[in-house]
Image (cartoon, rainbow, N blue to C red; front, top):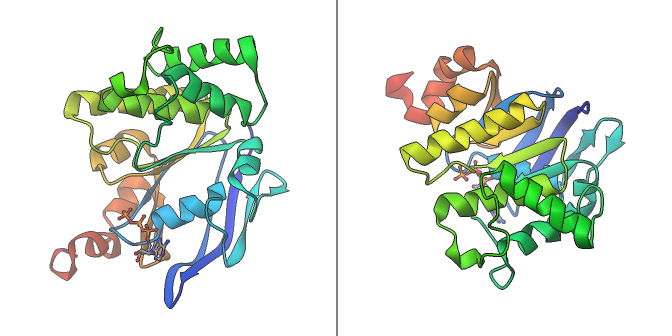
Length: 242
Ligand SMILES: Nc1ncnc2c1ncn2[C@@H]1O[C@H](COP(=O)(O)OP(=O)(O)OP(=O)(O)O)[C@@H](O)[C@H]1O
């Protein structure tokens, strides 16, 4: 895995609201970086623009030498970028395995039939759902839905993974499983951009954090350093705590 994700002056407005303003940063191959900020600061909008779910109004997104700005999500996936969503959105009429196979059919490389089925099983085993490909999606509890969401993202064989609050809503023991899974991906060299409010997870996984406030990046650097900056504490907790 060897590609760099680069954002240059990304900009997005919704009517009169500037949701993302001149956001620039680069993720080196294999980095796991936290994208933090209070509610409404623009994190998901940034993820949406990288993944092609939202067109940007200005700026550029590149993966390696390839400009992926304004590409549709399925084309972005083909350039090695996958994402999970804040809310798990399985296709309920398909089985667990079929949900993963769908991503294989439209991913980075295309797989069909037997090969897709085998690969889906492999991805499901990786996330801890070994042998459960034929189950109804409705059988899955919350952590297993999260696992399936991760398997779907991994099915497109990404080099860069965008995790949008993937760990949210997990209980403490599930959180540990989730953190371990991301760590495992980290060990394989995956580049990860992690939007997360759970600081335990951020501290466990991210050596670097980028913090946004009202659409702008206000800090970017080593996690411990960034998280102790007065401007960051103020953004989260208000003036009295800075
Ligand atoms: N589709 C949209 N239409 C209009 N406004 C939007 C839209 N999506 C986001 N916004 C606004 O843009 C701003 C940034 O939202 P965004 O969801 O990116 O923030 P966030 O940092 O991800 O927040 P959270 O942590 O709550 O998920 C907010 O003011 C939000 O209300």
